[in-house]
Image (spheres, rainbow, N blue to C red):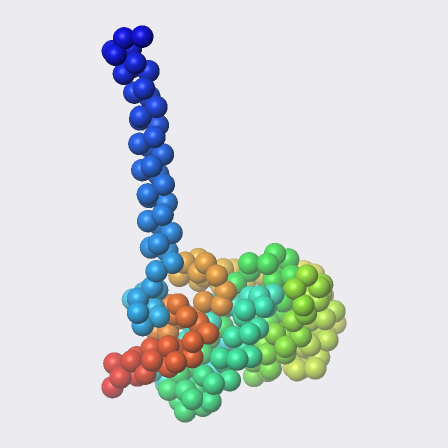
Length: 229
């Protein structure tokens, strides 16, 4: 085989190798960009925080800092955040009037996520003052991974325990998906803000990377409070 013929034979192979290496470098770069965050724990920033319209809000309306929690009632990490981080946040910032907190439903775990979220939307509509009691109790009731626990009857049981919502009506409305439109608003929000995992925490439109590092959360809130003065 002549050198000319050999070169022709090797040319497609060289091109394939170059293309493969180029794609590999691009994929690695995308992964690094996606997983890297700034040193202050912030990985994304938006000009405005998620809208509070139609959402449950804890805290004073005039609070200068808005913390938005994108969560899924089926998410074990969301339960952990609710149990470990939220009480500190409530004590240090919400009760003092510095922070108002909103919760947005994210449906990453299929039908059970939807059932729990629809129940929460009904409670918010029919007994808004009891929403947070219901919200906390649902997370508290979360079972071990893989165990079936979200059912219309279970949601009705929690609603009866924590709210004035009629449990039988709740079951009926879950079956009819009466509050699907309200839930769609949440879906549009988490897509708009590019939520990829739960819990995702935003502070005045800035996404927190280390959601279980309370010191980082405090640092970001204090910075926003300073900017508000």
